[in-house]
Image (tube, rainbow, N blue to C red):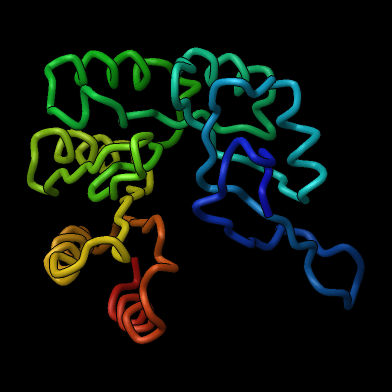
Length: 212
């Protein structure tokens, strides 16, 4: 399912059960929560809710991308709190380079109560032609540790972005890096973007080994 049509791609789609039943003896009411969507340039925010309705998505965790600002997301989430959760954006040149500007960018978002989640953290991103550069940021880097600290403090899931299919010989090392993070914080929830790039055995081992 794609809430934003050609503009945005679901990285994660989570099916959850509503707390009430539709009628006695019937199955629980099922709905979708889009745990990772981004507001890009060229998309009219007024199209988002109708597209969610069309796709059967009850709630979306939304962050900014391209030249859209976190304030754009904050304003939209404020207008639709029952449907949209604003997520703190870290990705961009400041994060990739570890620039001191990143701290100011993040603080500007976390200081606003409307932001109630973290967007994905780019750990390993393959180059996509001339459109997107290769990004590899260690879990031990200051910028990743800063985002992890925020996630732990606010009890927000940490969403790690790894593209294992493009990692080549580095795949095992990246998997070990991610597992070290998960293992170090057994009570904290972690999500893995592009988990579908793992084979069945790898995904099964990961899910059966770690409860979080």
